[in-house]
Image 1 (spheres, rainbow, N blue to C red):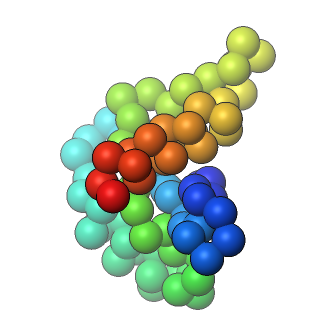
Image 2 (cartoon, helix red, strand yellow):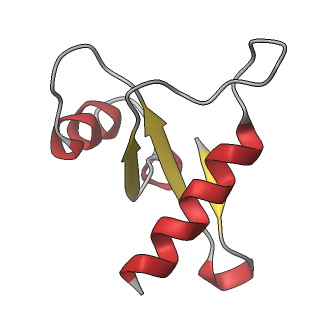
Length: 75
């Protein structure tokens, strides 16, 4: 999960990779059942594989950049 945008225009974006197809609605419903609504992402970004740094950790900068670019495309 990363926050995309600034101030009043920020939103939580969930980034995920799955072996089997899963819809954003399924993810939303599952998380709605166990998390407060403020902690459930409003947008979802599916990846074939999450981007990694050279050290093999999840590249959060790449996730934020992807969230910002997909937001600009939908605006």
